[in-house]
Image (cartoon, rainbow, N blue to C red; front, top):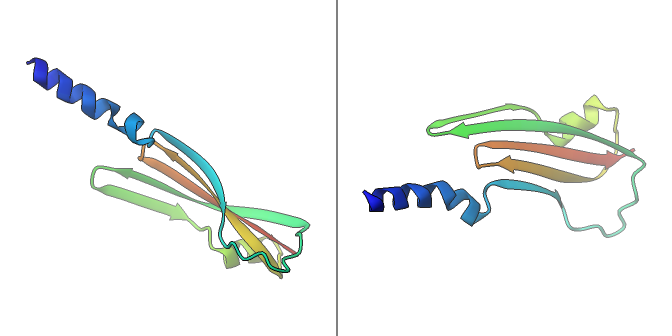
Length: 100
């Protein structure tokens, strides 16, 4: 009985041990910034995803072209992706597009 409780406790703490409880980072989609101008206009789009057991559902669009077209950006200079992940179940990504 004691071994069973220990196993349950280990499984419950596993996400915390692996750092999967909460993640919120912003990263560039490209690292080549040679002669990249600073952009005055910035807009974004997001995609949401929920995963549980065998179910995996994703909706919305974060394509750079879609975001640029929807917000009137005709020339894209660079883009960043911002990721929010909670417990490995909920993931949301925002793509921030910078341009003119």
